[in-house]
Length: 129
Image (cartoon, rainbow, N blue to C red; front, side, top):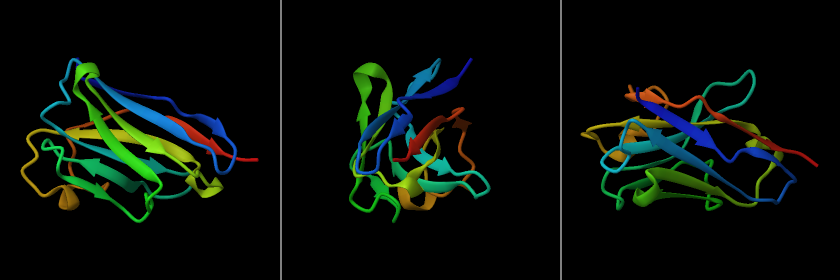
C-alpha cells in the first residue's frame, strides 16, 4: 500500500523554525516530483514549494519567500521542508504530494489543483506566542 507520511509538525513561537518530513511507504520518492502544500482552517489549500525528480527543478511560491527550503534525502526516501522565521499566518496543516512521472514543469505542477498521484494525511504546524 502506497502511503506518504508527513511528520515533524508542532507548535513554535513566531520567529522559530521547524523541519517537516515527507516519507514514502511502499513508494520511492526518488524519481517523483514532490510538492508541499498547506491548508489553514476555512481557507483553500495553497502550494508552498515543489521539487522535481531532477533536483535541479525547484519551485517556491510567494509563501516560501526565502524562509523555506525544500530538499530531498534519497537514503531515507524523504523530502523535507525546512521552515525558518515562522509567522502566525504559517499556521496550517502541511501536506506533501507525489507525482510520477513528472512530465510537466515543476512550476506548472506546483498548484493544489494539479492531479497529484498521492497525498499524505498532513502534519499540523502552529505558530503562536
